[in-house]
Image 1: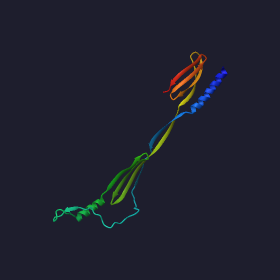
Image 2: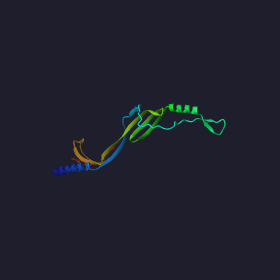
Image 3: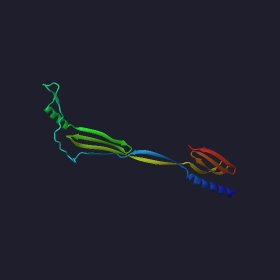
Image 4: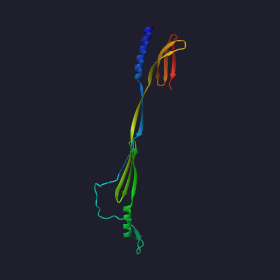
Amino acid sequence: MKKNLIICSVACLVIGFFLGRWPTEVNEIVRYVEGKTIRDTITRFVPDTVYLTGKLKYKYVYVPDTIYKDVPVIDREKSIVETVKDWNKTRKYKKMLFDNESGKLSVDLFVQYNELQCLSYTFTPTCKETTMVKKRVFEPFISTSFGANNTLSMGGGFFYYDVGFRVEYSSKGACFGVMYRF
């Protein structure tokens, strides 16, 4: 009797061991993690190519003609003043170039005297982090317990997902049970 019980227990342990290693359920968790922000400013630019144009382009200012009322006439001096004012203007540009799973890149430009004076950029990279979580579907277990009547019982069972079944043997008989894991 004892020999059959030992052989049966060892066989159940071996079968439970191999069954417990086989079925798994895989969950994939994807997170996007922001990296450290990179900032820089570039102020000294040397142009690669400079093209000369033929004529000077003015910002024209029109005044009403005193002789022909329907025909506007260009005021040369006011046009020159407006052209110089436009040339002296400071223009600032802010542009978000992209904001996606690769990161975020924004650019600030400062233009004056028809030249790029300053370029600032801010780049925050984003890394894709994938976590694979494996959950065992079938988990065997063994147990021992000591009762109040000075009885020792041994048993085992298995969990299938979160529902468990168990069997315990003691000198007084067998005990069966159902468990649920929270």
